[in-house]
Image (cartoon, rainbow, N blue to C red; front, side, top):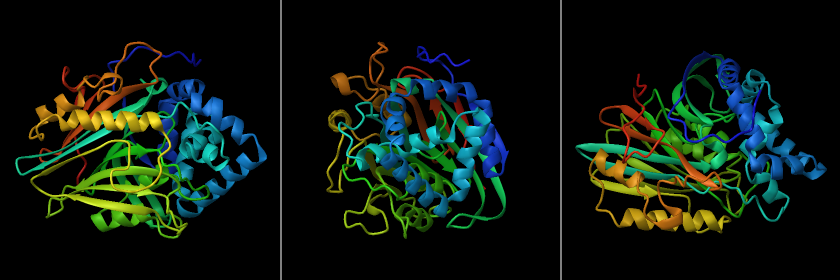
Length: 387
């Protein structure tokens, strides 16, 4: 029975290894983590206070249906995967899909105010030095998400090509929020892709387009840099909402890292609006939850204040040159309310850092932390998949 209680921070990172079709892998995630998913659906304030009431209205249902229809046209296999999660966890599919729609529904309905309980965090540091190549990422989320995540290592083989990019095989690992598809936090695949996501709260959102959760899920199947840009561009449809993607491919002879800011097209073109920054050898990069280069209105004042504060904190450090440097920076608790590592022990705090991952691109490992990385050792260090 799900209690709907928020527990103190657990010193645990659950990991599931699964293989099968999209539906089977989804079902395994749902069945294995069913009680966690049920609990999260009880606790999620945006879902219960904003998304579900709007979904009950005729206009809300219309926006839900047109966006679901658009996703089914492009990525029917990921809809099946999410149906598998719902069936395995014995929860209603529409609740899970509403979580993936995020703020698209309230914004399309001009629902004011948009959910006050939007997440306001996650910071990524890229270090691209010859002797030290790292991608470090904090995952900050609403307090109810604390302890409601798991790590999935999945191998999906389909008998015929799937979706608009005709994918037959996927093999990846990804941190997932309870009830969510893989790909939206920190992830990597067997083609050597390593990436992390920073949520950006754009003012301009587009219903009927592809929610960022599904674009980043499709990113998990890409095999090279051009492939990744093609998925983010999403020609023919385009992104419904915004995020930043930090990525590299282990086999890239240029050893280039990238930060891509993705937003809905301001001109209503049927493709995402992208701004691509290269981070070559010898450089480093920080990205948080705001547009650094795209000039578009942003909606979440708390997220912007937090982003400015975290970038200021990073700016006070010398450029990071080692894993120890990255651990210290991602565990920094200076900066007042909006520090990089968010722990405030009261259950009232809206946002907490729920996990940290540090990808070592040279050693081909990921170290996972469920507590402050400057003060604790990782729970596990997993080898990256690489064929």
